[in-house]
Length: 576
Image (cartoon, rainbow, N blue to C red; front, side):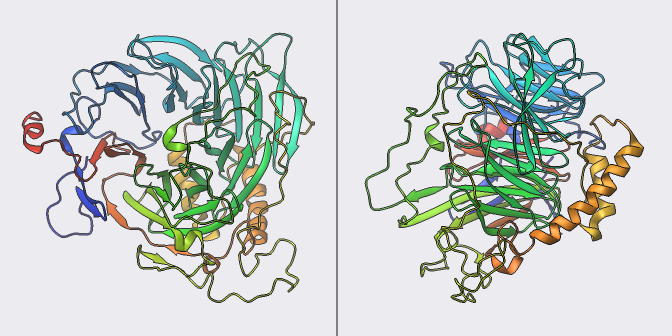
């Protein structure tokens, strides 16, 4: 629980912080937790996660919140900055035996005041579809764990679909499901469909429709998180092998990739216009990757431990130029609306996440500012600004607007375009037009056509940094102990062999386009870096009038944006 700090110790928990917009304040009356408000003993438990949905009811209070704490799952009306939280009246509460919820996601397309569709992933590998308003459990997927026995790390509805959802596991596999299909009574048999560099896609061989529709195997080790692009066409995957991989979702084409400085990547998010991706992980850094140029354009250093969540603030992010306001791109003419697996899917058409495509790579807006945030196991919240001096380093720009430390990335370059760099070396000038080789054939949808065969390998969690190997292994046991363990001896052998491979691969990628050296890209400093919790932070969500954080003790905190506190005294009076 974030408490009022007393004293000047560095360990003091902050209850407010200031940016150029004003003061963000912690609203103690808007804290959500278990009804008894007792800090949860988080040892050996899965991370606390939070999901929101708006049910569009007529009262104007349509926000709903879901969060998991240990074996428990709660569903409340979320009152945000308006009213105090009433923890005595959850709409739904569930306690699970033998497994723990690890992640969840609402379907915004089907949400009404009478019904919502909530997917919940579990530590033993199952996925449950529930309706917490009706208090119903409609379906359980992978019930017998025949599809995957490992922990569910991420679950998301496919943007624009009422029936398709994607599930990632700590095994390194992702599965595409249709809620209308069953999972069968026998283990699925797969047809090898499409392969690429360190990934493969398979379809399920069956005479009748069954789940999963597709299986993706991506990288080595756990697939820790994935995120769909704002338009739903691309998929960014953060893996334990340290790679960010970005795919065209329908065609399963690798668009580009990036390697962490060291260690695994734990989290990933897209900018509201889909131009940039931020990833964080075990190197304690946030890394900004350009989708258009397929390269790292900046790193941010502010955390003292692993970065667990990154998120863009769509309300503070701004892209402005001298032209009339750009139209939101909402054309779906090139999209195949029907999927052969029996579920039509429209593209997501979220206005805040589909900024205009008006800016080509040759033109530059007058003012560009992307705000994103990160939270980590160091209990700190960091806010970052990504401005034009980083986005367009080839142009002379003022560097006084943000706390940005540009480390000789553009000043010490030599004009050596013909210097004969090795094939995979990082060019000195870091041209914006350079991108990884990739195929751009949108017509080859894996959902609409046949595939190329490939094989699947087993994966093991990697430890990539010598000096932190023992601590990493200890932390992984603490944080990821809920997954299925098949054989300790074989796991150790796999881990040893894959660790050696990982170290060799890391040495090869450092100093290349995949993983520039620290001095080769700008280094961002956080606008804000505050300790806001006693336990590691696991949630950061930006809403219109507030931002929401959560820590492993099970406390979900609301921070009012500047000027968004309705009235302090009446709210405080309702708390006691």
